[in-house]
Amino acid sequence: MENQAHNTMGTSPCEAELQELMEQIDIMVSNKKMDWERKMRALETRLDLRDQELANAQTCLDQKGQEVGLLRQKLDSLEKCNLAMTQNYEGQLQSLKAQFSKLTNNFEKLRLHQMKRNKVPRKELPHLKEEIPSELSNLNQKLEEFRAKSREWDKQEILYQTHLISLDAQQKLLSEKCNQFQKQAQSYQTQLNGKKQCLDDSSSEIPHLICDPDPNCEINESDEFIIEKLKSAVSEIALSRNKLQDENQKLLQELKMYQRQCQAMEAGLSEVKSELQSRDDLLRIIEMERLQLHRELLKIGECQNAQGNKTRLESSYLPSIKEPERKIKELFSVMQDQPNHEKELNER
Image (tube, rainbow, N blue to C red; front, side):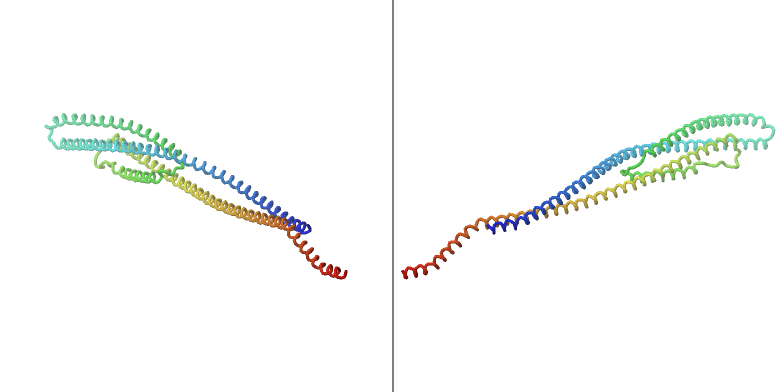
């Protein structure tokens, strides 16, 4: 009984320490679990926000891609309109040159007639007087036709200028709307460079279309005014082309800015991916620690069960061991008392 009580008292502190250790382990595991769950919730919130931002950015990029397509169509139509206007002005300049050459030829004929009139005898003067008025009337008629055509050209020039102003306004509105896109940026930039080269080529060809008149020829003041007016119109067209080039340059700068923004977004996405990778590593470490704690708990439980089984076995075998010892002692005492008993019998 004393040994049994001693064994019970020996196991109680071990069980208390084991219970305390298990409680501490449970608290540590619970704290780890709460911290892990809090981090996971924060990470999931950040991931949801980033996914939403990426979806919004993708939607915005798709919208801007559509706007770029519309802008490219507008630029193509503007380029076609400018090409048609250039061809029209080239045709008008060719017609003006032809009319001017006809006028110079007529003036040259008139001058030759004047020289002939000064040289011919007086008998032929009446014949020349009859030819000169007819030539003058023809020249006046051609001048009137030329003036009428110049007035029509002035009206067309006003219409073209109004159309150019409206196209410039549309170009500005489209340039303000065009932002934040990545798709088709490289191809669009290449197209703009090609169009810029075409504009440079066309603007370099415009001065060659203007033909300066011969200073030796006598020209009417109204004809000079019309020619100067057409030259100023061509200059205004060149200025409009320069404005379009400036607008294209601005668009290129905006494209570069949007490309930088897209690169920044990609860098942010890579940072998020690296952060997710580090969080996955942390989760794996926590899982390994949890498994190790679980194995330690299993070992402690096995040790506790083994110790309990040992205690139960010792307590069950203790009475059976004491009974044979008692019998042996009694037998030994009987064997010691037997010679004394025989001696007493002999004495009797």
